[in-house]
Length: 360
Image 1 (cartoon, rainbow, N blue to C red):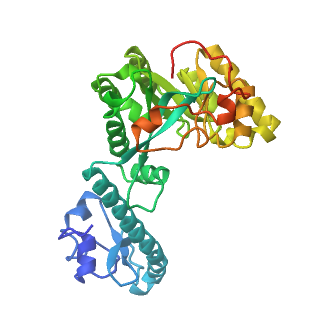
Image 2 (image 1 turned 180 degrees about the horizontal axis):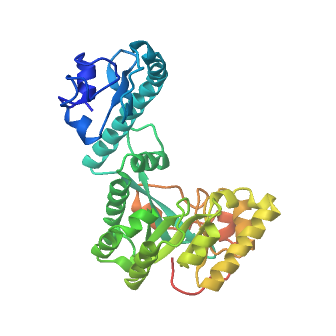
């Protein structure tokens, strides 16, 4: 728009007026290339500025025919429109500045090695044994929570890089984990479809990894994702759908992916002992899991009452602060009986039948 010799550049520099009724008949414009290229006959234009008077762009009207009735006073309406646009220019500059700041923040985090990984145990409720740990990203020195930071990274085009950095950092602990404990990593559908196979297989132990695909992203008939999950399964990797029950598309995703692990969202687990509807949903998920050859993990178990209700619903695996807080200490996450003392000594959860088949 500001190229030397262009109409708008000449208007901004003052070489041309803001309105010109006959471009082909005016010697100042008759030889300007764009006039011939676009077969222009007339124009009216005015600059759009920000609140400090800096030119952001041009608002213009172009006509193919000369308009000899145009007068300089006719530009008032365009100038009025341009003044209204000034507020939008301010918002655009602020948006650009904010996005640039986020991009730099994420870029700095990546350059420093990516997130630090914490691990939360996934527990077999019949025995209290840790059968898996979920790797959770944590970011030092930032005000946003992990979910907000991943969303912000996706918004500036760095979501894939941040996710894969977290996954790579998580996979580094595989050699230090007990051989019967599965490592679960989180990935969006886009990440699963774009390069995750090489990362998981490159770990050398793909059969000891579970990929949790977030349910917040709509999957639909995503052939690239379905193909990627089948390739991962071929290498022994477990497929899980995370946060099931947190959005409307959950059942469709279960039918599309047929995951080995269904992670029931905290929203359903919270106060499940007080709500028959939540218990019915939980029982329904266990039936679906049995039909597709999977199992259910109840996320967000925070009280013994919730644990009792989860077990009554037929769910055999759980995760939550009652069973183990996220910790940077891998040994702490992997080892030890995780049931509350009353449960481990004969309470309601002890002795529940375990769903047979491959572990998480």
